[in-house]
Image (tube, rainbow, N blue to C red; front, side, top):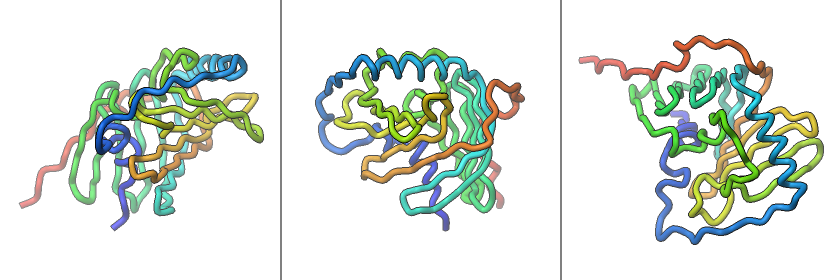
Length: 210
């Protein structure tokens, strides 16, 4: 059976919610003036992006590749439709993230604020003053913003990659508590398009068949 790692990536408590042992002490990261200026540019870009639709490719820790369509309507709403044979559908209605596995007939729900999605789906981004940002790196025509999903983590577990200097969101990577990474890359993206509200209605679990 294919591993539904997307649940780990987007919604499950393993992303900073159920780490073993005592929380690590909060670490204050110091950014240069240039890095802060870069964050201002990224913030302006993200705030100008009110909606998005396109395609995604996901690579999980085992090298499993899945793909499908993505829809984002800020603030807080998004939909990931996976192509068969992946049985996963992920929808956020602005406050709750629902992860549906059609094959297993399961439906799990999580508060949006507990997931890494909160950084992507906000309509008022100010990264310069976000204490979760740990580093900003320019490299080979890209700008990578590294962040933590919560303040008590000792190191970054979320990175956002943009084209640079012409900003466009290209991919993000999340590292779980076991150190395993899942990467989602975007392609054929259209920004600020009108999206149907029905895309963001939370799925319901199918009745069990007797």
